[in-house]
Length: 281
Image 1 (tube, rainbow, N blue to C red):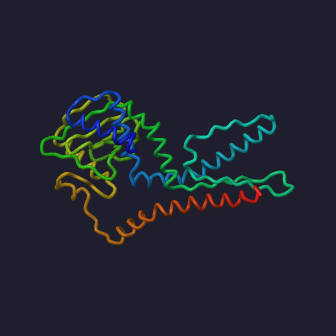
Image 2 (cartoon, rainbow, N blue to C red):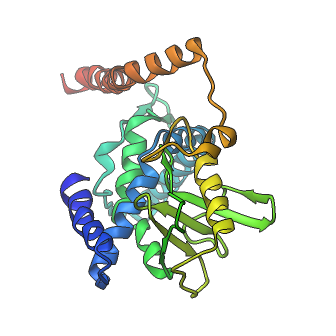
Image 3 (cartoon, helix red, strand yellow):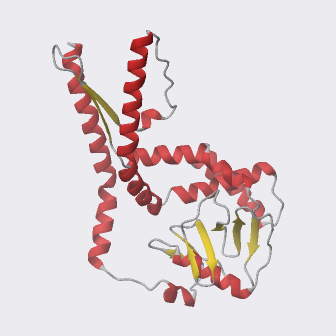
């Protein structure tokens, strides 16, 4: 992230702040940086966990069934199954168990995977090497804040906005969804913007629209809003919540997260090694 994404992006950001035009390659560095800021947040981890808990059982079941079909077909045709491993497949802690009772013609396969840190990092690597390229297809603008206005940012800084009408919008947009507006504050005075499918470029906007975008960026935050100076409307838009127990619980959860994930992955690996040992002996 540092060497291949953040460092090249810093050079591009310096050029933007000097009001210099970007080359196609520099736009690529900037958009990959935007993708990184979108996928590395606590919000995206929470969304990832919710998605994986719903979808992983279906994915695993379908892959197991597909594997059984391929094995049965290979047995009938006496043809070797050619396999091609995903280059990052070793990132995911996966355990495959086979069990066939002595003398039985059939048995079963069981697959187990730890959903958490490793699957999230696998997703991030996929997004930052392949999926982010869809951002290059859009027409981007760098919008200057009107005089007296500053762009805040947050711990969930890339906004994917579906705007329907005045007061009617949501944050369920996608990088390639027609009509989705993507916002990302580059500095207190510069905002990266695109509307998917729209070729219009923007440079300056009205005070009224700028204040609405301020509102949207602050509303999209998870826990924290950041600005270079106090913005009076922010606390009204996102009232401060003081809850010692909730704060303590969340802090302790994140502090224990690394060890909990590591121990779960090690436990799965150690069980696999223990079960393979008798077969090797």
